[in-house]
Length: 342
Image 1 (cartoon, one colour):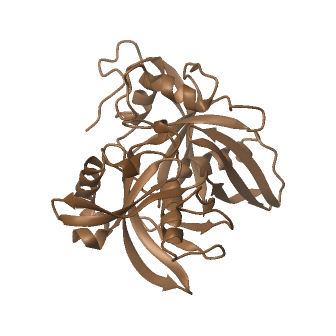
Image 2: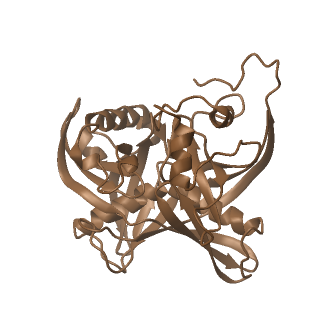
């Protein structure tokens, strides 16, 4: 097995783009390809083994990857209106959305020459993902990519104060669908704070809340059952406003206890929808969204829409940087095979 990748990080969260070595996945749409990648009877966090999944395992497991690795398989878009399609993956399986990955893909599409871009101005990269079509607006200055704005599918709120019983007491969570389903709760409500030293406790709380919401009607997507079920739990702190700008710090616990090093792209979209539903943010306002490692996304709600109805369209701006290009090999006599997770 030989696999070629180019790696980026978006605000600290890795994104490994597979350029060559992954078998083709059948299907007429990206959503169908994801369903086929999961395999008959497989789930988003327990896909059935197959040739494609062996590549995912190779790239997310030691010694070639690690438990925090994230990436995507490039696939054909749903039609000619988009530039590319992608199947997002992590150590546990395949996700329906990934904002930080969309930002990285936008930067790569322009930097690699796949999508033409001006030396100064904005290039629009349209990407088909399992939850729909998203756009990366790639900002350019002096022939360099300086940032990317991720425009997501509409985000809709299904609950604002849903009581959830935890080992730390009953807390009220908000639930929003933003390409993937996110539950958010103030860390202080759990007696915690978003700090690196508390990651074990934050991770445990996130996993507990995700499990507790498994049967809730609020986590069912209103139109597409493939997008149902909590993907991430966002634990956040309120920060002092910066020049009148709403500011929060969060850590997102997603999949089976994975930690997002970035402020979480689609999670930021979900937070924006919740803040709009609460009346705390309106079009023209900006959310300064900080991660557990101190990196920042800027988020905003576009005019129109209803977070409790058809949803709102959000934009999230961040930066992505290339970290390396890799050629991975699995020799036939390697007893570790696709690797291991600790």
